[in-house]
Amino acid sequence: MSVNNSDNKMLADIYEIKERLGKRLLILTHHYQTDQIVSLGNFAGDSFDLSQKAAFDKKAEFIIFCGVHFMAESAAILSASNQSVQIPDISAGCPMADMADIRSVKKAFFQLESIAGTGTATPIVYMNSSALIKAFCGRNKGLVCTSSNADKAFEYAFKRREKIFFFPDEHLGKNTADKLCIASELVILWDCSRKLGGNKAEDIKKAKVIVWKGYCPIHLDFTTSQILKVRQEFSDAKIVVHPECPREVVKISDAAGSTAYIIDYVKNAAKNAAIFIGTEINLIKRLAWQYPDKKIIPLYVSSCKDMFKINLKNLIKTLKKPGEYNLVTIPDEVKKDAKKALDRMLTLA
Image (cartoon, rainbow, N blue to C red; front, top):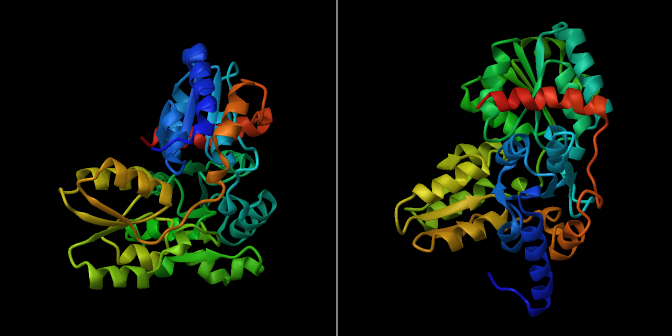
């Protein structure tokens, strides 16, 4: 990892603050962060890993979350009363999370229950969502999931109710239904801009899984044509993608899974293996550096501009004001209900 001379002073200051605060400080970094930011964290992981770390590490007074806002919110929901959560750039958001606002979700769930019956559907919300949406799920006996445990969340829900209302990522919802061998005709899409989500009442009654019309722009960049081209040019190559990719991309890949799954896939691959990966470019670059004995290649170069908002300048600005700058706070009532949904997820492990 190269460091510009202009960064040296900031790096020295960050290391000094880390040493001075010791275990009072916990810096969490998502895998999609740059190498420089990841190297400064106490822990790197995907959404599930970081949620667990935030939930179980009670020694830290100051939690700095190097990721996007919904992740920092989840840490704040799970934090103890003596802990604060900060994010270096408060504007680091998630387009997918913005696709499901609380008003639209409440309206859709009411319409769904008015047709299918009260208590017939369990709401499952992907981690990429606001605290208000998580709280809605908590109040309605639902839970949160990540791409690491979506299948377990589905199994949990089906043991309790006959339907699942999944949001905001239609692709993870459909791919998880496929993984559990749920017939495609029993999976319907809910478009909140249309009456009854664009569905007929009989189709809603018949459906087992109702998925929200939402997506991750990063993972929509990966296509079947890219995969077919790789197959033609590299007959021995393996292709692994994230389950936020469209269903047709996942179906013709060799494997699909969360960022943690992709990391393990590369780690366990044979020496000299050629692996094309469909996910955010920072993770792919890091894997290529960590495993030089393997050929790690992006299926397509796609980056998250919100993850790139976290940098040395705003990280050190945050570290210099522990417990004060860019605090992520959740109203007590919202926190209580959202924690129910997150706690149900954490019990899945």
